[in-house]
Length: 461
Image (cartoon, rainbow, N blue to C red):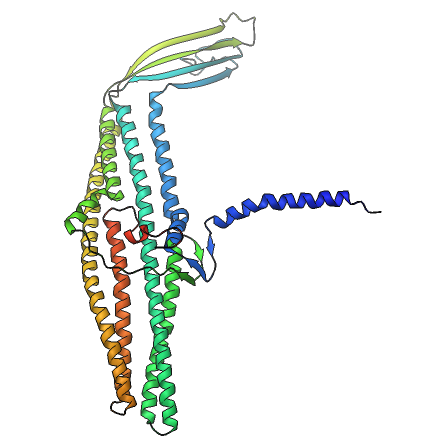
């Protein structure tokens, strides 16, 4: 007879394990994926979150900041006592720590001995060397904190730029597909009329040429879109597919602040703040290196025990202690201190030049992006009018062709004009968003453009 109780216990145990596994599984589903599946939805906010967690630039900057923090603590170690323990042993005619033992000139009886002790060294005053060294390390650490913010900003900027570029290429694919469909319909109509001998073979050939051109442009647009998805994966720092469902973001042309205001705001950019912290760190290091020419006052204390292995020897043994004060001043170091001062001064000049270069580069980037937004805003307005006009011209050309008042060349030219107008409008719209993102980054915002900042976590607006 089979017992039911063990089977019941086993089923209960399995159910308990499954219940415990549910929260972990739910947690895994909300975690940031390392690989996105083909055809998955990818919103801009999601892409930004992935990049700010996974991109090597952010991880490298965070690790470097930890290293800078450790260097600051290393500099502070000079404020504390340096304590060492020593254990020595000797055997033979020598003695532990002999002052003179040259070629056996000091003959002593063979003796085995050991000594153990502790020595502590406390720096009391060094005329500001330690203080300036610690200050330099703290500023370098703050500079690295700004480097982390700058890394997050550039990663967010690259993600937004790549995302809008992919949206633009997706729009161009849609335009190309629509063009292929429309030219395919016209070809079918003319082909039917040609079979009824109402249209010539020339008309059919001309439409076929335009259809082939549209198909060629569609192939190129699709390949460009795949390349855009690949670049999007790279800027997110993950391995992903080349086929996503992207979020349709609104294209709004908004008035920008004045150029002078935007240039002033670049002074708050993380790269500028980082450069200024590096200048301060270099200046403090120059002061620290110069202080090495001055004396250093230290206190020393030591204590321990000395014993021999041969009690018959008439050698004093037992505990001991000692205390002393020491003033040390370098007289000649082989020009080491002088060259350390020169090195620190050169690093200070390099930091100042680097700060100036960053400010000039951001000023130029702000100016260029601002002018791009102005130009592209005007192009968007003109592009919308051009699309409307070209579509009306296409409808008129089709009607004239059906009535026999126009040729197929007019129809194909009108179709080409519509495609070009739609393409230019799409490029102007998304290039405007890219310029807006670039302007927001260069003006020292947090790395998120105003459009991205308004996106809710669920992808709404």
